[in-house]
Length: 78
Image (cartoon, rainbow, N blue to C red; front, side):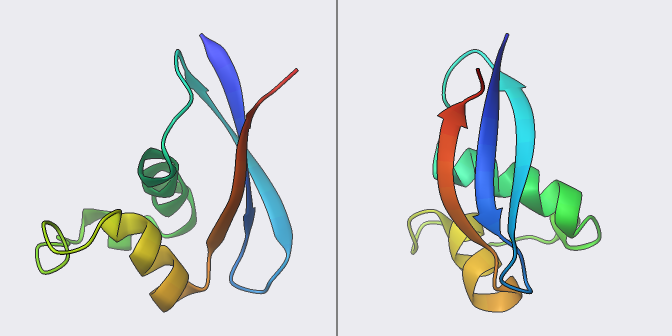
């Protein structure tokens, strides 16, 4: 397994990182799911029905609009 580092701005605008294991580089949507699990465990169980199918990358959009969390980059850790 490879280690990938997700750099993101948290709700306070502070740059943070989160490492995750995956064979392939995760998409922004996959990274957003992992961030939401870590940062907002209660909202992780919410259904995004109203956005799925109508919005590309609904988890990325909700994290940014409702929680002010923005993914900056996803790179392989050295």
